[in-house]
Length: 212
Image 1 (cartoon, rainbow, N blue to C red):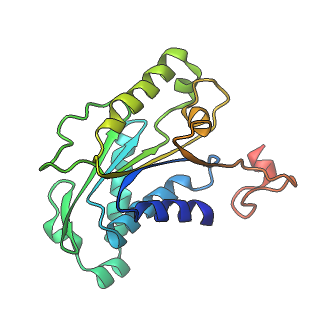
Image 2 (cartoon, one colour; image 1 turned 90 degrees about the vertical axis):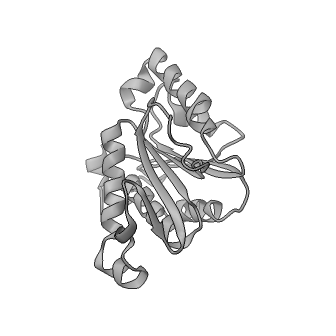
């Protein structure tokens, strides 16, 4: 988690470029929570202006954004950073002197309207946007990767954008994470739930018996 956090935060403060990170963490180990905290960090401590979150369905993306809003509404953050909700309108709000857009989409959705006041996403987070069933299907997996590369990733800010793909290493040829792992354009960090010595990656959270 420390290594993944370092990858994310160092990439987020780069002023130019199209950095691509592929992260594979096992199910049940809090990887989506990590990304939600990353989005909160982006809003509080960087100058990023347009964060796009893509999940497998629109409702999952909406839940992701709602959780981020709840964290930003916590008493500690309001006391330290102020009440960001004062200027909230839909998913566009002002914080620390900059206008921020936080948008969520389901995989395969139309991207019309994402160019808001000539501002395109400078952070695109793909959180579990491919299901196991889609990875197992040759037709669905080709459709997923085609939409991701040909549509979603072309909606980016052309000066700088950080792409973060977080998913599961499904045992199928159609697994997007499996393809990104060997793609030299992507920096990947992928690990399993059980360590080489047979212990759980996070034994206090999930035992080996539970994982098996």
